[in-house]
Image (cartoon, rainbow, N blue to C red; front, top):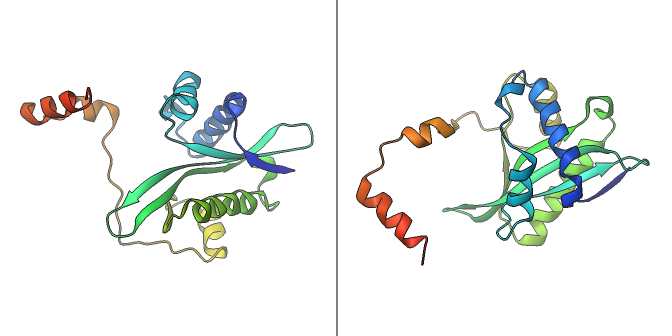
Length: 170
């Protein structure tokens, strides 16, 4: 097994693992991301995510850790681990730990002051994994989000939206 930085050629296998995770979380219909989106967002002119992969001896990707840089107003630079996925057949082999270690090493390399992630409250195997690593699982914070539909329907102040659009062309 090898841990390495992800490459554009890995994206079809990465997207398949993301779909496997969505099926595990009983939400396969929620995955709307496409290969083209991932190519643009990970390898286009302004990449917004990076990832590590774990591959077996046959160069089949059996795990991923996808992360991006975020910013805390209190702490500064941080990394956000969006997904840590190990194919079902490889869970419990230490592969998840190696992928997590890669993200921790990247956080150190980039000078991040914090590493954050989310875990579903019913995902006991993942919760146990993170507790075993000594991580803090904070019950006080709620996660907020707006879906694509909600973003489009949200009533932005037209003056503010015009300023944002104008500033983006500078």
